[in-house]
Amino acid sequence: MIRFGPAGNSEAFYAEGNKHTYEAPKWLWEQGLNAFEYSFGRGVKLKEATASKIREQAEQYDIAVSVHAPYYINLANDAPEKFEKNLAYFRESTAAAGYLGAQRIVFHPGSCAKLERSEAFRNVCKNLKDILHALHEEGYHDFIYCAETMGKLNQIADLEEVCILAQLDDCIYPAIDFGHLNARTLGGLRTQEDYTAVLSSLENSVGKEKTDKMHVHFSHIQYTDKGEKMHLTFEDREWGPFFEPLAAVLKARPGMEPVIICESSGTQAKDAVKMKRLYEEA
Image (cartoon, rainbow, N blue to C red; front, side, top):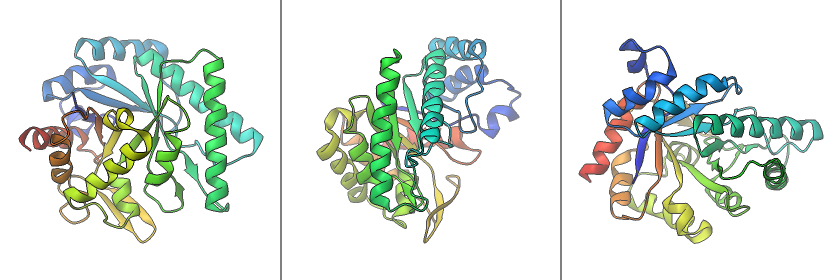
């Protein structure tokens, strides 16, 4: 089953009088959605008691929860003190995911800064393997770490790099942000053939299992010649990418069961409902 849901709470959630994220699962269920991504972008500050409330409601309403690790992670930096900080971000995110009943932890691999891209990516690979080894030694098993494609050209990772990362360990899956891919390719995702090429690249590198059950972010994104500029809503008809071609491609592949998270700016739940409808009608 393909799952659809938003990243965080949308403006409509609060406009209807809701105040707490533990109210989100019931609200999402009422919208016909069945996934939710909790962001730790600015740090892991969620209390275990609050997480338990969210988990209880998510289980009751069949909402698959994923989490997004802090944006501060930069695995390209090989300084020892930075490694310890990155490890802490992964550890805290994984522990919190456990409290929430979430299996998937999405993360940004890092950015090149002043390093050559090849050196930066080698650092990412080494640090990621070392961090996962440490977490496994600490007893954190049964979690999936989703390496996200990034939208700016100076960031790790493009599609090829995510494919490589997802081959480093059985617990690493691709998180394909189609908005980011479209931004970093300056509008390269337009047709069914464009989306099919992405899925074929994945399947040829990471295999059918990880492709079928990949994590997906989707939103329209404005971009410049340097890549991503800002997230938009589905009201945009200029920048894209557009979900209709992807919906048709997914419908033609009945084995695919990704979790699809909408990251529209403020209308993420409404636009997730639209994606679900487009998929069902494809």
